Amino acid sequence: MPQSARWKRRVLWTGLFPASVLVIYGILFAVMPDKASMALRSSGHVFLNIIVPLCLVFILMLVLNLFLKPAHTVKFLGKGVGIKGIILTATAGIISIGPIYAWYPLLKELREKGVGDPLIAIFLGNRAVKPFLLPMMIAYFGWTYVLILTVFTILGSLGVGYSVGALVKEKTSLSFHV
Image 1 (cartoon, helix red, strand yellow):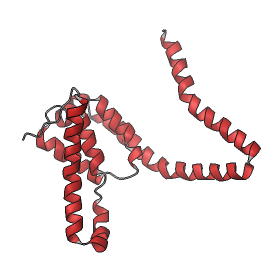
Image 2 (cartoon, helix red, strand yellow):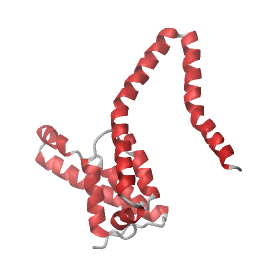
Image 3 (tube, one colour):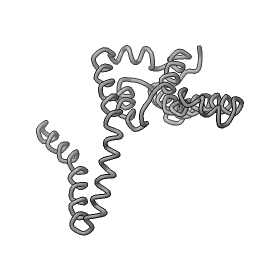
Image 4 (tube, one colour):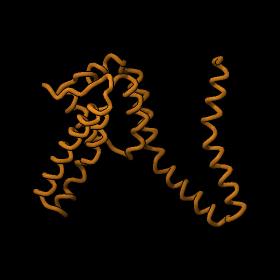
């Protein structure tokens, strides 16, 4: 298939979802204008809530593409990264901000550059630990509960990362050796 035909096909498939949404909204506006208007406002609010984190992630992707070459990525987060790569990934997951789905494009790109699925799983698992929320959690639940929950969340993400690596049988495996 020629390059231009592939490009046209890709554009067609990429535009299919937005076009379908527009058609559905058009039908809803004709049938139920009040509910369609409410749904459109709700969709607008969701869009406004995700646009800033998505822009930040895309800017981060741009910076990573400019300065971080695949060889660097694999060096720090590739096969057999050891404890340093695991700690780096867990820390990145803990300090990451914004909605989780805003991180998916960046994680996909890192995966394509050689970052292993186990490390991506560790990153995603550690998103549940939010340092800025810890004081509030301690106020509600107490030190002991929060400490145990946080430690088990981090250890659980390591277990999930190891399990993903064992089950996916990918080319980049997670090494827990120092």
